[in-house]
Amino acid sequence: MHAHTLREGDEGKSMTEQATTPGTNANPTDDSQKTVTRNDGAGRYEILVEGAVAGFTEIEPDGKGRVVFPHTEIDPAYKGQGLGGILVREALSDAARRGETIVPLCSFVRKYLRENEVPGAVVDWPRRGDAQVSASPGEPPA
Image (cartoon, rainbow, N blue to C red):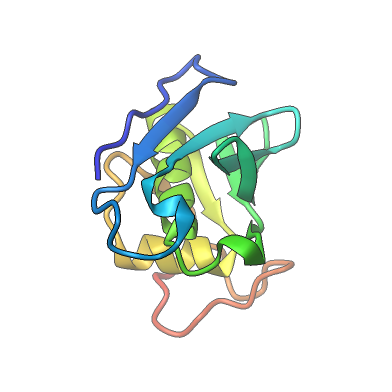
């Protein structure tokens, strides 16, 4: 897949992703455009399919160069299309380009980071005792 990505200072602009294998699934969104946008006003990155919000990953910048990712959600109507992976990949890539340290409280974001390379990403792994977090076995130490 080819992605156009956000650069620092591009708040409110979008990253666009096209499906690479149109027509391989009966799902109508296979041929559609998917857009990931950082929405600072709502405190999240959103993935839009044909202009409709299909999911989001929440962000909480701490003002000290760190951005916390506490929760990711995909609308059930869009499940099974890989949108969560696209959303989180683009959000983490954008945070890395901005020079923000990523704090992955969301289990989906933690799993993505354990299984995928995000060029330039600096990750502050939560510790077992941190609020809202129950670190998974095998997760890198803090």
